[in-house]
Each structure stands twice: as C-alpha cells, then as structure tokens.
Amino acid sequence: MEYKLAHKFLYDKAIEKGFIQLANHIKRVGPLKIKVSKMDFVSHLSKIIIGQQLSVQSAAAIWKRTDKILKENKYKKENIKLNQKFRDAGLSRQKIEYLNGIIFNKDLINISKKELNRMSAAEYFDFLIQIKGIGPWSIEMSRIFFIGDPDVFSILDLGLRNAHLKMFKIDSYKESFYEIFRPYRSYMCLFLWRVLEDENVTI
Image 1 (tube, one colour):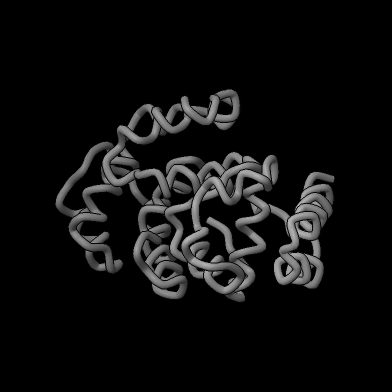
Image 2 (cartoon, one colour):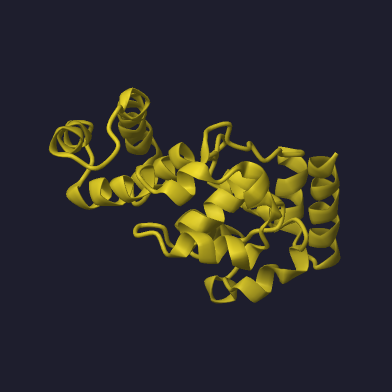
C-alpha cells in the first residue's frame, strides 16, 4: 500500500538525515492516507476557492451553505439571483466572481477525472492557471486531494511553513529542502500539517 511505503520511506529518510524530531513525529503519528475528494471537479475547485484565506471553521460553514446552492443551481450562466444567494451564504464579491468563473466553465464541467490523471503536472498547471482565482496553491491542493498525486509539496502553504518552523530553522524553508522526500512529498505535507494538530486535512 502506497501510504505505508510512504510512511516507512519518510521515517527512514528523516533518520538518515538526522532529523530526529521529524522522525519521532512521523513514527508517533503513524501511516497517513491521502483523502481523495469524491466530489466532481467543479465542486472540488469551488471548495478550494471558498477556503482561501479563511480559517478551517469559517471555510467549512460557508462551504456547507454554498454547496447547497450549487446542488440546487438550475442556471446556465451568471445572474443576479444566484449572486445574491452566494452573498447570503457569506461569500465576498471577489469570491463570487471566481466561483462563477468555475461553475460555468465548460472545459471544467466536461473534463473527466481520467483525462486529468493523464495530464503531466505541467499540463495540469497550464490547464488551471488560466482560470481567474485559481493560483499555484489551489492547483497544488487539487493535485493532492483530487488527483491523489503522492509527490506535491506546496511551498506557498502557510500551514506547512508554520510546521517547518516548529521542526527546523525558517531560513531552510525552501522547495530544495524537501527534494530529498521525493516521491512522497504529498505525504510529507500530511505529516507536517499534523504538527499543527490539523488531523483532518482534506479538500
């Protein structure tokens, strides 16, 4: 099983490099699985957009209300009534704009998970980066939690930065530092998020 191989690899690598605190943390937490989203791609990206720059609790509450609106949505294009529902759910004007750009995007609606899986990391990035509101962090989160890519490290993630600070000196927080943990850097993200006691990371 991949997650068990990842746990052993990351633990052994931490021991090899003398990262004893990290090794002890990985051992104590035990194997972690990537919780791949069961949503459709549009809903998954919508949830990521809503969660940007919000606490876990706030994002969850707003997403619950927004998800209900999306499931009841019968419109084929952006309109005033739908935007008002999004505002009532707690979305800012900017996030409503981003959300409309996703839920009415035919390329996103029509693409299958199989097609997404066949894309290289570069192709996946190029496909999504053109969509307003979808930046590098959002793309990395979707690669981990929608595609299930085992080897993504999101250097832009504030939680990972804070977890790194608890384990290492902050000046070592660089993508190059985590190269040694290939091909299981997504699992390293899971272990680092657990440093912050965020036990149920999923998007």
